[in-house]
Image (cartoon, rainbow, N blue to C red; front, side, top):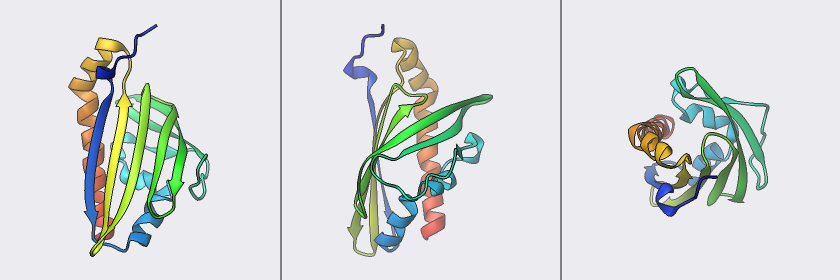
Length: 156
């Protein structure tokens, strides 16, 4: 069994100002069906079933391409949700040993500041850390950069 150590846990923190009505931004991000619009097409993201409106305790299943020719199932649970303010999703089944994603929506003059904090671990000890350094971190940065561009496109 692999020993779990703190150096194997990574944190990604992002912030983006969206010049739009906070209610409209919340409405978009709290609809699980809109997630597919925020993932790069090369990842071939597919929600399984119709998750409906987001709520605490909700399980959302999807499939995603994590590498060429490699598709995985991913199941996340919406742990916490305060409408208009924040929600937290956590992986139950998927490619990470740990995935805990906080989404915060802070009203600001002229719009809303979105803040994300992702705490994650690959697992697999030194091999996982090497994969993180070589590939996974770059892929995650690319996903969030794509999302940033799509949010600008959608909300101006």
